[in-house]
Image (cartoon, rainbow, N blue to C red; front, side, top):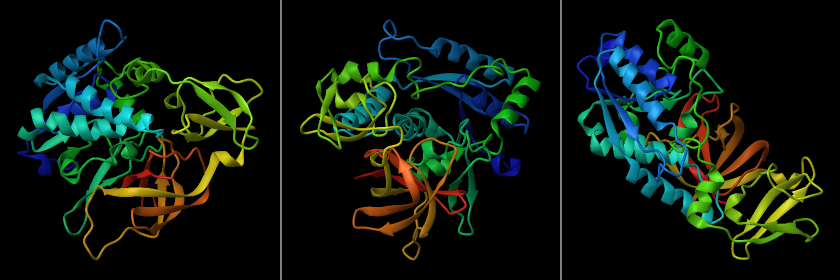
Length: 362
């Protein structure tokens, strides 16, 4: 982070109440900058029904902004979240797909709805994401990975638009988590020892199945063993299950893995065993590739890449084959739990530069 490049820039910081965004404010303050801080208020749809940590988040954010003499403004994106991100999530699960609300939250809310309300007044929007950026010889901005493989969040940013990436600033992206904690403790930040949030962005302690049940209800159907055609029980709704799922199935004689969904017949197909072959795929298609940084006509994605299909520390070697709708992915080794609707995030062979992502479409 070059202070000369930031001088004279209007910088907004999205403060969540967590330690990461708090250290973002410190990083900017130590460079002599005084950004404006914003807390995006979303929380649960009906606060009397859902347990949420938003009040504590707000207190933490207020304390951090005050410590560095920054203003803090609350931006209400409640309706936008529940309209846009929830609609996306429910449409996908109803179609038998596996959505990622966190990915779309970054595009639609943190760099979307916030930008429409206040972010457009700023040159840069700083967040506590574990990600980095770099400029190439043409002056184009690219999303690059964090040195912390466990915390790297480039996969959650792989659907933002190129104009959003141009305005994004990740002041802690060059750190690993332990370094961020050390800075927070050294600087006596109020949330230095606060635990990282878990689960879906902005849902607090809401259970994901309760979240889905609230909108889609239940729709019982048969659970069939793929290999034998034997009915082993009933499910309460295909949307409560994901491809590759093993835990929480509730059927005797397991373990069982979810391997397929038939939405039209409302049938859930499972395979028996601890590591069934049907739980893996090595070749699959991705549709409508979203480029984080647009390529010129003479450029193309490399043949040899690395990929992620879920938020894990590892990057999986693969090759790309161009198709009419996108690309075919040919992984070096079989991948567990490949599910339609998931985002496949594509990186260079060194898993340094993130090119973008696309939905898996089996």
